[in-house]
Length: 74
Image (tube, rainbow, N blue to C red):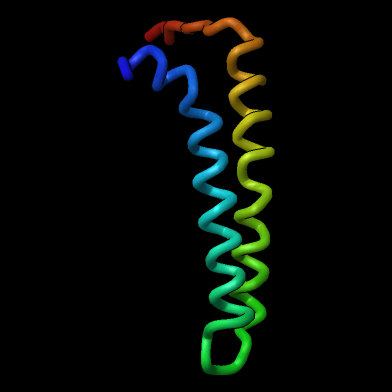
């Protein structure tokens, strides 16, 4: 696999990794952790599930607007 194909598929790979990690952490915290349930971590991991939505929107927004470089005059 060359770097061009990997760079094209990277957003999908990244999103799948984020969602799988978040689901694994939620399952660990809710089911496998032996102590009391820590609601703050469950909330954090649930927020991690939504991260790909915001990343995709940010990528779309940055690719739609042309890059403008402004020079600061002294």
